[in-house]
Length: 321
Ligand SMILES: [Fe+2]
Image (tube, rainbow, N blue to C red; front, side, top):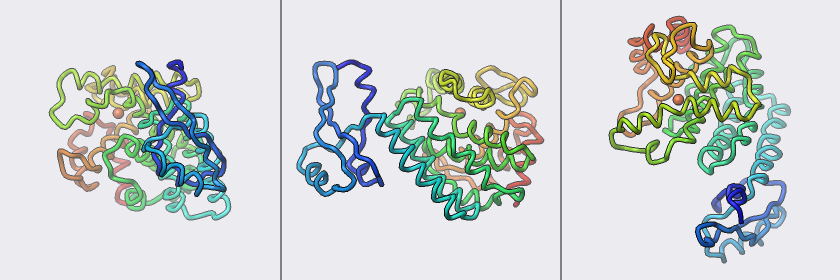
């Protein structure tokens, strides 16, 4: 068993079998062999005969199972995403419902990418999400109150990524950006924080005060995310720059490069505003959730410093709609 074979298998819990699969796949369990791990096939999932598998699962003394990443990818591509897109074409739901249907799918893909964790190629499953949302948003845009009610307020990176993508898309509409640019902006928002996958878990979830070294580690995520996206050779430059520059500040006091104003890609400051706004209005262990007005009041104090004045003012106007 080689290391590459180890990375090929992704852990899943029993609840995973209750998802709506249409195709079968092999299920494995893990056994340690020396300092390596071996994956033994012990059952096949057949969606037409789940009761047989259910009996086997109850009999076996395993709570965590493994699936090949290629099967997991196919599950999203040919079951979940296909089901979502077909449903939208058939039902033609109003814009708010389009967002409500898309959010859980994007969240699940990003959760599996970040937590299993799946390889970076998993990210191309998100390609259709901005297209679907941009098509649904008309000239009138989705009202902010509807958008805000749809976003989850959980403190999880995958939830944060989805929210930032949605906020970016709608702010792009307010900025009268072309549909193509809004799709890119949305995709860049969804992916801007994926570099957090490479930050050690004990630092990411630390409850105590962060050390200087912890901060250094966290501040590497823009560069790491940009590098990972660049390696995929799949994304436009704007998406890479949104990942790399979404913590730069208007006045040059941000990180990692300390770029200011025109030196920063035009899409990155949009992402920065949405990133901070979502962080402030989401649950955090160390403080109460802020309302949009509380968050914007705080952010307005940093206008012209952290935030581009035109962009922040446009967002503030949108929040009143
Ligand atoms: Fe970030």
